[in-house]
Image 1 (spheres, rainbow, N blue to C red):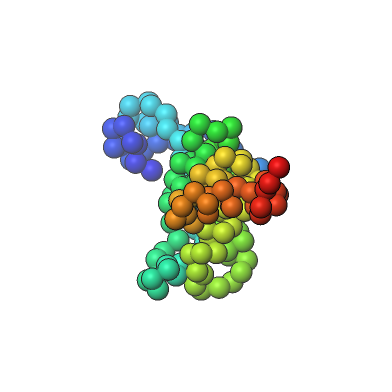
Image 2 (cartoon, helix red, strand yellow; image 1 turned 90 degrees about the vertical axis):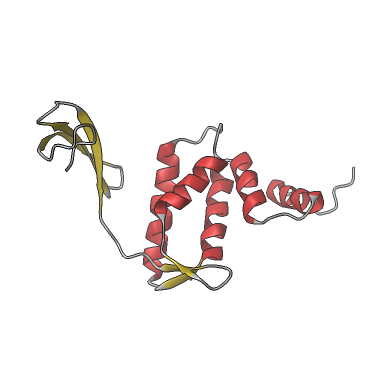
Length: 156
């Protein structure tokens, strides 16, 4: 592993830990040249299905893209990076368990919204407003009413 500070290739592992699901190994390493420490993560590389975009294009699964979208939705909310990582881990497992070679990107969006709905209501609404591309305030309010479990026509 190349040291991110000095570029030296020789280093040693000073600590290793597994995550709760035993799927990721976190390693603390120390460079033999500059003695600085850095962290690496090992995860099993699994074949993920191709995503079919709305316009029919195919795109490779990009975990970082999903994590970044979740981070934006959860910004300034009480949702930890650990919760986001756990959710994306479970989403990846679900996609692999499906055994499909291609999956519509719509399915990913819906799964992300379901997960956010359970994690944090505000993050869910933020994500839904971008994902669903509401055309006006009425569509947005309808989504909020659905989320809150209220009637479609909420008259006092």
